[in-house]
Length: 177
Ligand code: AMP
Image 1 (spheres, helix red, strand yellow):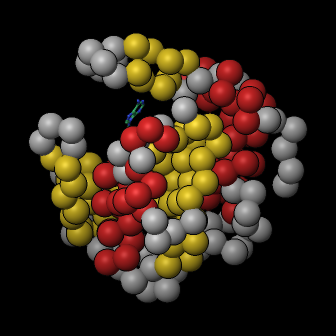
Image 2 (cartoon, rainbow, N blue to C red):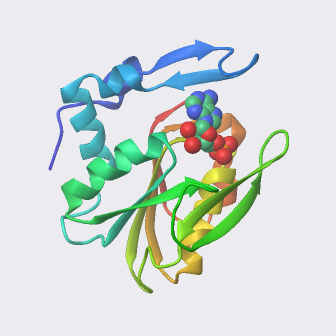
Image 3 (tube, rainbow, N blue to C red):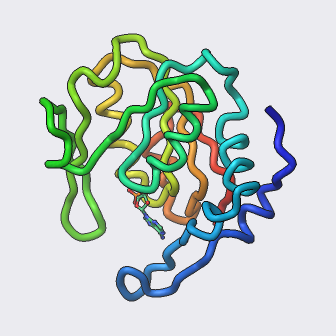
């Protein structure tokens, strides 16, 4: 479905919050966008525009803001929704993937039976920064033998070159800083 919402309107609805959660970080707050029904729906239309309903088996969303967009995209595409969560949150057996943060490391997890081998996956998160989180999610999807069709972000911080960690896959972002 086409949308009348432009990337410029989406950009205007993203609030920049300096020094959150710590000094030096320019936090991109998506809550004004989510609160606007037309812009939220338009963002989902843009994130899913390359796919017809039924052409994707699962939309994988990344904890936590990625869930919001991935779940809505899954409904629109008649696909299942699969969460990649922070370690220790999923109740059943999981695969885990460690990745580096600016200081230290983090771990994400996915249920071992979350995707069937060969499943066609659209991976969505709210924001691409260094790419560590998305790359870890990609590893989990690949571990289950599923196929990544596209990786989509609402926002990309281009100067951090997160794309370099995801270069084997088509990547789209709606708003680039
Ligand atoms: P990275 O692994 O460095 O690509 O970080 C991406 C993850 O961290 C995403 O799940 C984002 O939600 C979050 N994130 C990183 N930087 C920001 C930022 N400036 N504003 C909002 N979220 C961010």
